[in-house]
Length: 183
Length: 130
Image (cartoon, each protein chain N blue to C red):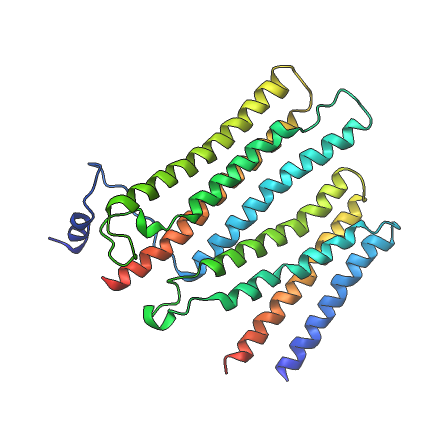
């Protein structure tokens, strides 16, 4: 039995097809991941700010331009809350059988951590879905020429989502290397 | 001597950066692009502050990677500030508060200033190790 098979048996797989493990990142790549994630987050929010400012700028010439209201703000806020929730979770509590974490010995904490993760991803996906809804209902259905505002919302939520994923990968790669050092 | 040459070269680049930023304001009598300097000067601050927040358990865990959440947060904030420095003039140019050429000048000037800060801190930390 090879070493990798031994490792797989320890993990107790759920699915028949093994899910590929996260890449083992070096310190430099991990840092780059954190930087890229922050950059994406900022790009997303600046796209939104640009849409808000530009809509108010156009409004001064032409009264029929739709102004960004609270309903446009809420999907970005939801996505950001989801990002915060996901990255607050102590990732060693997500997988059972890790006895290095203080409470990480499976069981109840494990369940709550996964529940938190679910809520976070639901908020992220809800923000993205909300931005698509706003694009369709507020700009495409009434055939407004200003679809840029809706597209900026989608770009904002997509960037926050990818920023979350990249930060997640960068940080769990970190945990993984710490774990392997002990094996 | 190499260190002196580096410092002189960096100061030239810094002067170029400030020249570009000030020109972007002065040529059009419109001083909005100066906010770029604030974001680029503030950008390395979170990194410096949070780099002191490394875990106290480094000796115990052998590798420094074990607990660097605060450091990562500092990097995250730095990256947000850098992107803000680029995005702010673009938005100002989009709503025609500043000219397009002023946007180009302020972005490139901000980049030069930020590059100088980065290079200087890189050389400085290298000297610190010995």
